[in-house]
Amino acid sequence: MSIARRLASLAFLALGSLITLGGQPAWATGTAAGTAPVGTQAKTAERADTSTALFPAGWPFPADRTPAAGSRGMVVSADTLASAAGLAVLREGGNAIDAAVAVHFALAVVYPQAGNLGGGGFMVVRTADGREATLDFRERAPLAAGRDMYVDEDGKAGSASRTGHLAAGVPGSVAGMAKAHRRFGRLAWDRLLEPARRLAAEGFPVSERLHDALTAQLERFSHFPATAAIFLPDGRPPSRGAVLRQPDLARSLEAISDSGPHAFYRGWIADSVVAEMERGGGLISKRDLEEYRAIWRGPIVIQYAGRRLISMGPPSGGGVVLGEMLGMLERFDLRGLEYRSADEIHLMTEAMRRAYADRNRHLGDPDFVSVPIDRLLSPAYLDSLGKTIDPERATPSEPDVAVAPESAQTTHYSVLDSAGNAVAVTTTINGSFGSAAVVRGAGFLLNNEMDDFTTRPGEPNMYGLVQGESNSIAPGKRMLSAMTPTIVVAPDGRTELVTGTPGGPTITTSVLQVVVAQLDHGLGAQQAVNAPRVHHQHLPDLLRYERGGLEPSVIEELERRGHRIEERAGFSGDVQSIYVSPDGVRYGAADPRGGGAALGY
Ligand code: DON
Image (cartoon, rainbow, N blue to C red; front, side, top):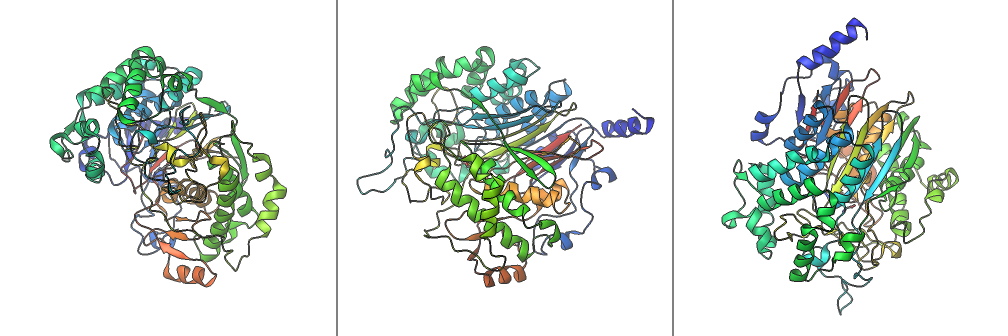
């Protein structure tokens, strides 16, 4: 190492753990290892334009916020305490997979809206020596589930796929973490669960975000006494700063720490899940839990802008949809267009529309339906699809349907270690606090992932997605997801970007816009995360944008081209990204839309 480089890295170490806090609760800033400005080095990763040049004047998130920076490792997650758990593992010599496991379990405690033991997700790994792996730990339908289980006598799908025990798929998270750790982990399993166990046993201060999220659940939780007993002590959400302890969850984490996934899928936790199902009329059986397996699957590999993108394949539609969108857009050369101009938003919208139509028609669990991945991502098909895009006119999606309300939570975390191993994980219990049903005695919430299936063909689900037979319910089948954990590899072979987000169907379109902002328009990691986003999902035929995210003149021009356009409620997603510059500096960018934190060293 040259003296200059060594001095530079010493300077980074001297700054300690550097942090960006997005919409951070006040209590958390004190727990972070440091809030020092990252200095001029970080700025080199950001595009130099001022905020007004880059984002519309009314946009609330700045373009001149610098990301966290580190010369060795970086953890970006939706919660400071979870990021800190991951950072401690990295500092102790754990690798990115070890840190990811610690983050996952910590999120299950401090971010119960989405972090979980009772849910599932997807992990994309790229090791320092270039090995790539994608892990499916998605939930499965119970063996007693059936195609029309949610359809009532009037032929309507009721609310049972969203709230209560019947909404739960067989959880995959514990199996997934154990499988990833077995293959790639370095530190002992129990070390990685220790931060989560302590946070559950000793408690943590409730953030404003959690307080607000619990307040929104008051009515829903009132039907689930075991849930209310944990999250609504004295019948109310704990106030901001109050310490929330979860002793049952601590016991579950201790059992998993001592006995591995066995404790969850065969031991007393499994018995508790089955007892809970019997109490609440759910379907998950002992056999469902025993038979659950996380699965290593082939990655979706996408070539774009001279890069290699590694993303998640079915049963997530994320990689295929991202590949289709980028494949169509590559044929239009976005680099030559003004960033977020009407021309660019129009082309992106048309690519989104077409890719989501394919998603809803063709994608599902590859163990149950044949998914034409190769055809959908073939250059010939993308050529023909790209040719149907009229640069001047919106193509109507037919038939149209009513807009379903959008809600809910999922979470993404990105980790990079000093050797260069990278992990991107998106995990969920689907809606905010999942099914709202807690497993009594085990202290964790069950997912409501069954709603991601086509509960009734032609009828929109919770996210307004109108899906087809390929994603219909069958015993043991995995429900189609939009989760898109993605790693971008630069032409020089380094891992360049690790990213992903929650947001239901907006997940994949958000990842698209982060990728395009960085690779085509040269935005830095924090700028690409802070930037406004749009979304189209074929049906409903509606282009949605975030408040203040489009210039009025752009809206006008898009309407002139035939787009039905609407401002959405709230914001799109909660992206957590890591960017690695050519000289190896790791930049961590937490989304200011959420309360996440990037911690590096
Ligand atoms: O797997 C999926 O696509 C959904 N269950 C994700 C839900 C979600 O992102 C909600 N978050 N905001």
